Length: 232
Ligand SMILES: Nc1ncnc2c1ncn2[C@@H]1O[C@H](COP(=O)(O)OP(=O)(O)OP(=O)(O)O)[C@@H](O)[C@H]1O
Ligand SMILES: [Mg+2]
Image 1 (cartoon, protein in one colour):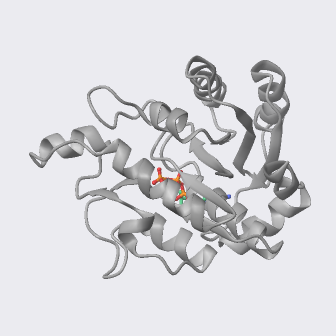
Image 2 (image 1 turned 120 degrees about the vertical axis):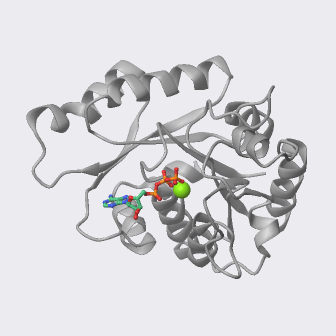
């Protein structure tokens, strides 16, 4: 299976924006791409068709014909980690191997899969398994989405360490939401991260006024040859 796993240093850093942007860009380059959100949680279902808004965005970016269950096999109606959401709802924790099976099915049907994680790598799925364990099973290289704000060196370097501890292959880092007028510190974040993490910064994306659309993100990623790097 060919693909990429998009994780983040935290929730809300731009995983969906980057995952949908990469998927859209690859499709534009003629590649048959599927995008998946194996685990999602939220306070209420997003729409009649998609329980998670992330799945809806990923499905739109890839023009998907699959069902919500195929693209997002696990959804809990509590905005929390899958383990905690399941516990609060008195449900069993997610079936990690079931989600892996769905992902492999997509990987057989399509040339490339873009997979969005949930939160960060140490989000618990079950009492024994973290997102990082799932990535290990999936065996896809990781793109780490981060931001340039205060605290980011710590969160990004921790994420890189966890990748190494779990034996995950890191493709690179995307620094998202760089302010139009960055402070001297924010400006230096990509360079310092690349040096201290020993991992390439694939792209630095600007903070946009409005909710970014995946085509806009995809076009910006195109300028930094992200498609080539993801496909290499
Ligand atoms: N470069 C950007 N500039 C401005 N807003 C952005 C940018 N990237 C993402 N956003 C917005 O920030 C919010 C969080 O982004 P996104 O949903 O992609 O994060 P996420 O990491 O996928 O979050 P989650 O953990 O909920 O899956 C969204 O409203 C998104 O539209
Ligand atoms: Mg998301």
